[in-house]
Image (cartoon, rainbow, N blue to C red; front, side, top):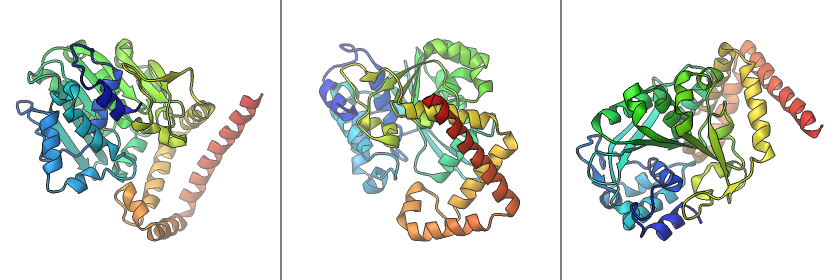
Amino acid sequence: MNLIDYVEWRGDLSFKKSAFCDVDALVLCQLSYLNFDALLSADFGKKISLAELWSRFKASDDFERRSDLGALISRQTVNLLEACAASKRFGKIYASGYVSKIDLQNEEQFSALTFFEGALNSNPFVAFRGTDDTIVGWKEDFNLAIDESVPAQRDALAYLEGTAKKTRGKILVGGHSKGGNLAVYASAFCGPKCKKRIDRVFNFDGPGFRKEIIESEGLKEILPLLHSYYPKLSIVGMIFRRAGDYSVVQSGAQGLMQHEPFSWFVGPRSFKTVEDFDKASDFFYKTFNEWLEGVDKEKRSLIVETLFKVLTAGGAKTNSDLGKDWFKQAAAIVKAASELDKDTRDEVIKLVQRLFELAAKNIVENKG
């Protein structure tokens, strides 16, 4: 049973009959990937139900464009909204506080919205969107390896604190992929009044954090509230160090596609879990993070800047762009790579060679 099956099967049960659970949290986090521009207000005083939101979404003049979420986000997300709107459980959930921004200059992709069980501004669920189809969004993810914080993290912190000031009651916070990282970061570093109201933090296969954040007092304070969920073969969630308790979820997909929430198996009130990660996840976690922690900031920056300079050489702004005219994009990428100055090329090659050396070492150790 996947997320849509869950909504259709459990949708006749109100939250009074069956309390809010971790699967409900993932449903709302997945909805945050949808484009609600001009359909949903940033004003908490202008909430609308998911039933009304679906009506607006399907009646929009650009329905097909809105429904195309790019190469990496499943179009089933549109079907999920439709299923939620038709259900008793989700149809009367209200949404507001919608913000979405792409800032190419500051290399930021950020979006969030807030859900409520009723029309009152109480007990909000804050959902942060993960990385979308934009290349700038992926660049910002890589910038996590360089900067103490990235713009989306700082905006997530401001959004959570702003939501706390405009609402009352307990606060739930969550996100999938980068959205999970934002949820943890904002919860860890918000002010004491806001933090005191946080009841639970949901991280769905989001990247972790560098050592200095993992060891910060702010993050340690929310560990009892935080639970992370990763598929059996996780790559995104293995980037940087994990924090807090976690569960490993069974997925019906292969390889990297296990990151896709619609591949996760769910039951009546929780996910179908397995005992531990696939060996490939553990291998990547150990190898990548050992390598990253051995590379200084200047060299990490060199790798990221070089990679995205080459990827965007053909003018692509989204991952979908990279695939639309692959021959043209590939030619531009090869040309850009060949034009790198010798010092940059040699340094990047050395850093990549070091990654492969660590991988080989860990393979030998695992066999031993």
